[in-house]
Image 1 (cartoon, rainbow over the protein chains, first blue to last red):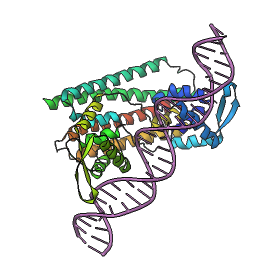
Image 2: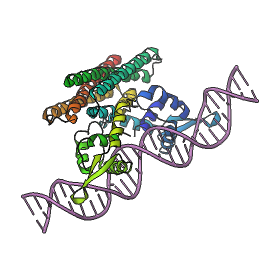
Image 3: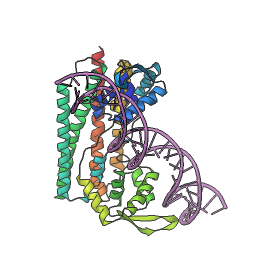
Image 4: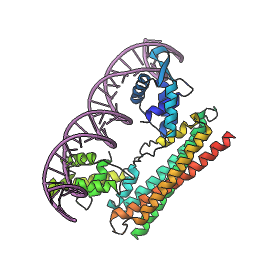
Length: 174
Length: 174
DNA sequence: TGGTACATGTAACCCGTTACATGATTCG
DNA sequence: CGAATCATGTAACGGGTTACATGTACCA
């Protein structure tokens, strides 16, 4: 359950409301750990129950600002250090597995689309890299850069791979 | 819902029982789309209800062999061609985002572990690549190779990235 | 005063995991 | 005959998505 830790992480050093957190989930974390409003409010309630966060202040319109407690920070640290690998699921790769069901032309078409998609994603991240307020000096920015670089490398790899795979199919078709 | 399509894909050309499918999920598809026994039997029942598969034969011990129907194959083809990108979730990247909460030493240690893990995964796939019965000539083998190559490239990229990220942190620490 | 942004919550549903439960056949 | 393997299913629970529901404050 990592949503919990995403919330804890976002609260480090800066109190925030559920509404505030949603903005962060929709911007910075959108590519890494998407979450819905429904989920966030639920998790905040649970975290408060468990004493990992506190309601530090209440504002207008029922706004509740949460802060991390000692236990919350400890839990975040604990989670940060145990690096057990996650079982990945990839619909894209699953499609590749069964690509033989299609005609070679259809397969090539599909792989071309994957390559384009990867290129587009890569471009999107490049924009993000340029435009972002990377200058606030918070820890989000430093480590956000690392995560972003991962994304750039991932999409580049994907594009290359898709082109290579297309060649393989084209070759075996001949 | 891709479990459904994984099942359909595995049934192309070769009738199989839930038990047979589980073996495939635990071997070929383990790295791409893991599934539990519970899930598979449930999905088979649902697919049969929807007319995408049929019970072609019944064997000893209540064994039921399923075959793909026309509609099932059509649905698989349809799914294979719409390449809408999936929203990825990565606990590993989420950890990177919040790495600033740890000391630089702890961060470096964590990244080193990630690099090792990636290297180990890479090695595992290399073994798979060598040992596998890639010679049956079915579509699984051809496209399985493509998927495997994707894995190899992914893990190599990850290792490189983790080492690079460690350097970044080491540099900004100084 | 009317629209937009702020702000929080609930309910139904789907997918996936773990654990439990049961029994038949084959083979040494 | 006993163990391993074959074979199918159910129940409880957790996490995620979508849709619904409600209301307040601000500002043009």
